[in-house]
Amino acid sequence: MPSSRFPKAGPESATCQAEWASADGGEVMTASSAAEPAGRMIMIVSPGGIGPATDLACPYIPAVRTVDEVLRQTRNPAWCRHPSAEVIRQIPTGTADLYAAVVLVPARVKDPEIQGSGGPDVTVALYAAVVAKGGADGQMTACTLPPAQAGICAASLRYFLATQTLISTRMSAANLSHMQQVLSSFPAAHAIR
Image 1 (cartoon, rainbow, N blue to C red):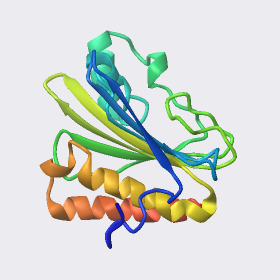
Image 2 (cartoon, one colour):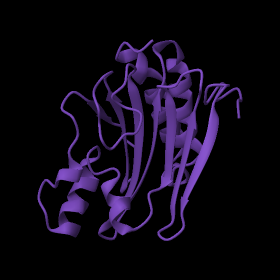
Image 3 (spheres, rainbow, N blue to C red):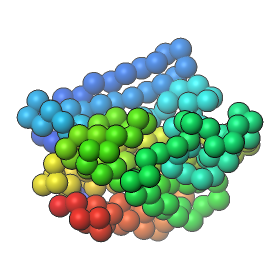
Image 4 (cartoon, rainbow, N blue to C red):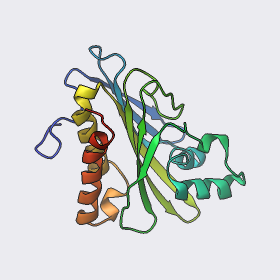
């Protein structure tokens, strides 16, 4: 829903599809548009299960990778890798045990862990994680739209951070605001216009 803080969190012509994995608690929302068939936005509020909750952010957040390696007793597992062409920036949360990273997947680079990547447009994703008691809960959102709609992707990531992540209610308003500024400037800093 548009507001002054989040002017447009998705393309107007997009339709949404929710997936619920009731056996393990997975919750996924996807928005796609017939007008932009290669574009999509995906949000994983909960990947479900113990392993998937750790695996989701493992390639992008080092603290989650450490937990995953201890949990599975496997060093550098295949599911914790990402394409070397990606740009990953850790976003400080200012709070212990809370982590976030923004990921840029260049056009035509396929990251098997990020739906929508690999096509003609850049994909930008946000990963958030809570690491505590030997485990990790991960969440993510990703946006793949043409460069002219990069502002929609930035707004979508900011909206997800502020309203859907487990970490947003566990940090100060000042830290959350700083993180949103990073998400606003990240696409432009990498020449996504």
